[in-house]
Length: 180
Image (cartoon, rainbow, N blue to C red; front, side, top):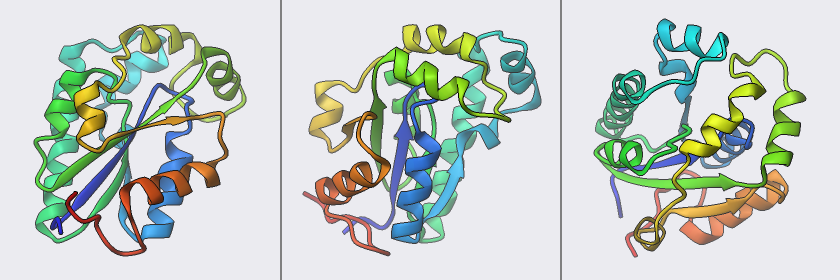
């Protein structure tokens, strides 16, 4: 059994990361965090103005997230985290956290995601940045999928997605998955 498991719910803005992460965290009893909470003010200001982030903006942010996961693992806690994790290089950095890191890619059509983004209030990421996120997205590779990460279809209900994750990773409340 792994000492800690980190479920990184990934995908572009509006794909349902927060909804799935909250449901998984509630079911499993694991610590939960939103990667957006780790952004420095300068990144939030750029996104609020509709300016896409560049890699140099993202590296310190991703390192903070990795460090949080490692601190949670050191405390014996598994986690659920939302993070766009658009590029494989970003996922490689996050994978350096202590414990097992599993990516759950919420994937779906641009029209559905755009509709969701337009229907939400109070988020600093404007729908106008969706095309830049879709362009930057590098879907999970065969190697990442073979290592246990999952691609999930966002047209499914949140309950169906939770059930799919729990079944695929053999999770139960309060336990990390066993090594396969």
